[in-house]
Every structure is written in C-alpha cells, then in structure tokens.
Length: 213
Image (cartoon, rainbow, N blue to C red; front, top):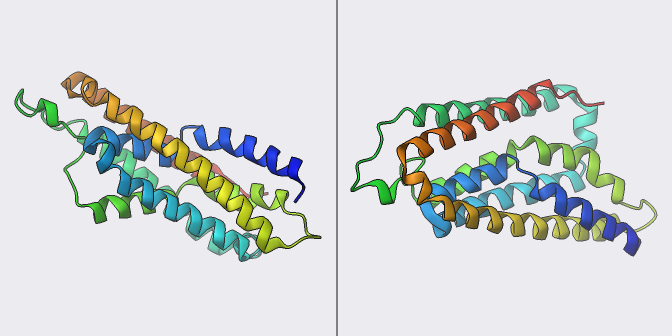
C-alpha cells in the first residue's frame, strides 16, 4: 500500500468513525448512565466486535457474503432485530417513573450492570452495527493492493481503524459523562432516552432497507 493511500484511508476513517452510529450512541448512553469508567467495558466490547468483523473480512468473509446471499440476509435480519430491540427498550425506559431528589444525582439510563454484562452489550451492538458491516464488506478491500502482501496491508488498515475508533469512543464517553448532571432532570432524561431509542430504530430501518449491490 502506498503511503498516500494510507493517508487517504486515515482521513476517511477518522471522519467515518466520528459520525454518530450505534457504537458511539451506545457508549454515550453507557457513559451517561454508568459514568466514564463504567463505560469502559462497553468500549472494549465494541472494539472487539470491530476487530472480529474486520478480521473476518480479511479472512474472506466479504467474498463469502457475496457468494451466499442467504447468509448475508440472516446476519442482516439479526442486526435489524437487535437494533430495533435497543430502540424499543430505550423508549420503554423513558416511561419509567422519574427518580426522587435523593436519587437524581445517580440517575442512569438503565439498571447498573456488571462489567461482563456491559461488555457483552457493547459486543452485540458492535456486531450488529450496519456501518461496520458495510465498511468491512465494501470499503476496506478498496485500499488493499493485490500486488502486495494482503496480510500486512490488512493489519495496517485494521490497526488504523481501531485507533480512530478508540479515539472517538473516549470522546463520546467523556461527552456522556459531562451530560450526567443535566440528565438528572426527569424531563431531560426522558427526551434523551427517546432520542436514543429513535436513532436506534432509524438504524434498524436503514439496515432493513439495505440491499448489497
């Protein structure tokens, strides 16, 4: 891979990773509910999902999905179902009774879970992320030079993507932590949860309508 190709990849991926999507929205919500440190397992889960999907793409998943439309459809519908469930859950959570004054400082978007549960939630959100699936299947291979070592090129591209993604995870988590005091207000909490739910449902619809070319 030529150096200028890598620079183009870095610039594109940096902007792409910073665009709000299921992963960033999930980490933002976890940070609001659990604090910055509490959102770290969610970051780890999303990052592992990204590495798994990109590694699978490098191992030939893209070609397999193109040659097996049925497998792609199964994965797509599983992603749609999970994103829709997250959206519905957020809307249902918005209908919970408002916290008391004593509890307001500790308001969360969901009951506090252990690190393992938070990690698994991030993992499943990452695996169902339509942006990541499209990136792995259609975008990433365009930067690979077939005349050079594909293993080395994929390693560089995946490491670059992971670094950009992690940077934005930290930025969104820091932003979510800063919103905690404002979201202690029942009205703000309710509308934030509804906004989160609506965005997740929009992602589910977008993935449902997606058709590979």
